[in-house]
Amino acid sequence: MQIKKALLSVSDKTGIIYLAQILIENGVEIISTGGTKSVLESEGIPVTDISKVTGNPEAFGGRMKTISFQIESALLFDREKDAAEAEKLGIQPIDLVVCNLYPFEKVLKQGADFDTLIENIDIGGPTMLRAAAKNFKYVTVLIQPSDYADFIDEMKAESGTTSYEFRKKMMSKTFNHTADYDALIAQTMDHHTGTESLRLAFENGKTLRYGENAHQKALFYREKGIANSFHDMKILHGKELSYNNILDISGAVNSIKELTDSACAIIKHSNPCGLSQGSNQRQVLETAWQADPISAFGSIIAFNQKLTLDTATFFELTNEDKSIRKFIEVIIAPDYEADALAYLQHHKDLRVLQYIPEHLPEIMDYRYINGTLLAQDYDQVLYDKMELATQQTFDLQAQQALIAFGLKAIKNIKSNAIAVVGQKQGKLYLMGMGAGQPNRLISTELALRKAKAFLKAEFEGDASTFDPYYQMEISKAILISDAFFPFADNVEMAAEAGIKTIVQPGGSIRDKSVIDKCNELQVNMILTGTRHFKH
Image (cartoon, rainbow, N blue to C red; front, side, top):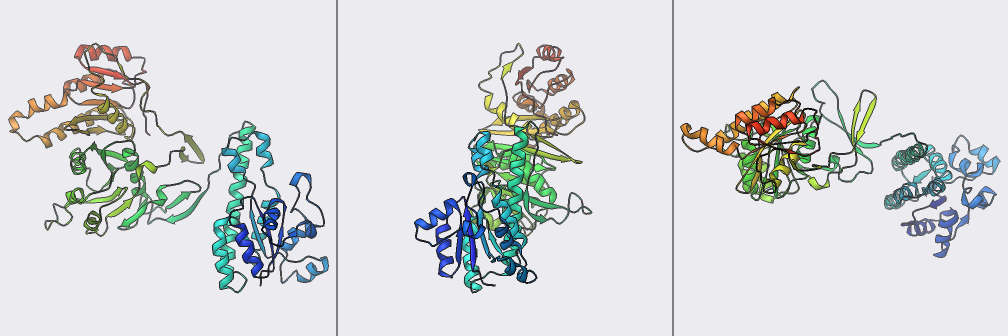
């Protein structure tokens, strides 16, 4: 069916003049309202005032324009079944609706007052859009300027009309648009009446191979209106991502997004088992890998700078001895040297992703739990204070960078979390960590054990001289806790292992006894005032 009559009523005038000119060239009569009509007429485009269709003038400051029996009937009637009734009632079909709604979201973001928000709630527009979308079998509906080019191509290809597939696509887009529009209004009105509500919209659901386990089905959605989501990651090589891959990718990108210089995170089961930053990317990777080479098997690795070939060859992907090749699941970097990408492609299944960590959106952290939703701000505060609570002399300023690195690490380790961090030759690195344990003492034990293994792996001397080397190096390390120590037993364990400096938020009713134990054992204790639980 030819498009013979179109109704244009838009808040966003982008592209509307060109679209109208194309319609006129194709013999389409244009009906329009208010500001849209004025813009079109100023360009010499002939327009039929909507009042000639409705039989009523625009009224009440523009609140009443399109809502009428004549307009909604012209959009809704079935062109085959209802044709005789429409003719009897004098209803002429409208074949195209071009409408974008009052800019409620725009004025909301601009901080508009309540009365201004109310005036920017569109009533006639959604009614008209929904009517057109419902009758998409006969009516084409366009809701945003980005659709105009495709519509014009359709008209040219379809000799003045549009295909059923295009109209169906626009119908779906329209109902999503009006649903999102009303959801934002409802949420805003709830806020103004003291009842908080939340409506989130997601799109482009991708079916994953399976969920956390093979018997679970899984989908991966993109949140509407969010720039640079994980859904937008570029997959440069390798097989499809899995549900678990995506969770670990989140852990990897979050672990390096705040790090400076060249940084690398190695993730296993959402936790960084290796983390390092420094000036040399290859050395940073080697140091991160050294923290836990067993856990690094099958891991996900993220970088915050363009990946070089020198770094990529660390994985030995072309080594004839397959036992030497390092198996990893995913590599993420903001960019790749061409020869580095070509090298990584030797592993046919290795997923190579392009994503810029700094682009990670930080709006709210949501968790859906059994019919409920938890929402919180992202953990962005590193510390509230940096206070030496013990009696020993300690150069806090000289250790500031290492402490900050340790706190950035601990933010991304599952509670109860303990991290042992060190620095050498311009590098900052995770030596060992304990994560997700039911009590902090077990986490401390694990972190210290890993730190000792780290130092043993880097030690190049005779085995009989390792102990003095270990005592020297562990005394330079810093132990970080995500929450306060409820008892002094963690301090005793750390001191016995050779730790001389502990960083924790404080806040326990037993802080004094814990600090007293530090003084007794000559261990420095720094209080930050900020807890970093991650459940």
